[in-house]
Image 1 (cartoon, rainbow, N blue to C red):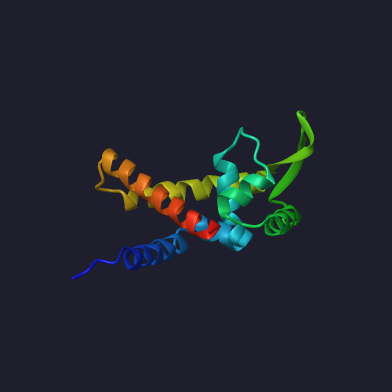
Image 2: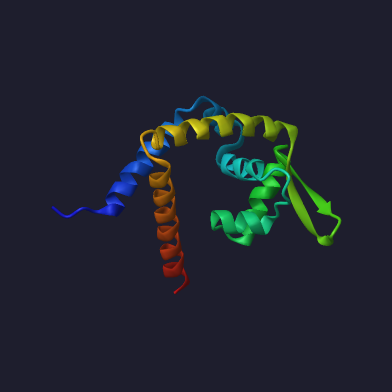
Length: 147
């Protein structure tokens, strides 16, 4: 019987999605922020590093107009602010507000729990290989999108 990786990835995606939707901190963040939870997690993870709109565009494979709209809405919700940087007056870094920082703490705890559950019986070598394979799959899909 032939194995189908895409089918298994889809099943795993559905299982992860259901698991995430039942996580208490993630649920609370979703109620407050909707889909912005992922952006909060990304910016929070890179605390201490200047994050710009172009970084979000690249990380989430979204267009400039989509990123601009999302950032604007998140500012209105009091989740982030844009601040000028000393080294380039044209750039504005994205900074989480105290409200978003508090949400990030809970989200981070949930994602650590999820990752531990997913890789519970994996050796470090298996985790490294799995991660490498995922990145290669993503690279292959990006190549396809560029043609």
